[in-house]
Image 1 (cartoon, helix red, strand yellow):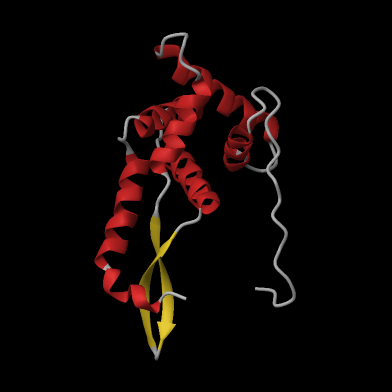
Image 2: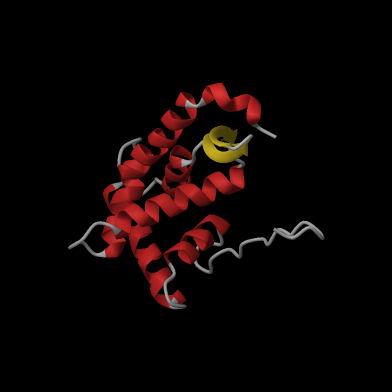
Length: 158
């Protein structure tokens, strides 16, 4: 970690189709080996697949935003070394880091599903997360449970 100055916050670029920075972040998370066109095709197909079952009045970006807000963790544990012992200290998560974690968890759980096209797995994960179900929600609940169990060490936070 640099001691000179705080790193400047880079603003994520919005995607070209919807003009939403959240979709741009999702595309960058799906991105592998610099193939952005493939990543954007996967994300746009997933968004269309999510909207396929919904009525036409539902905005697909609203479903995505609801899914990300549902998966976003409120607290997490961080290791702090105090007096030769390492404690798992619960810390609040900033909105930006929570969004990054939520997107990463959804993409990782979608990628772990074998035998299913990536866009379909991602769409299923988005739908399940919007309905408060799925593996990404389970991951968030595990993180919250761990923070709740280590609440006694909250006074080590700084």
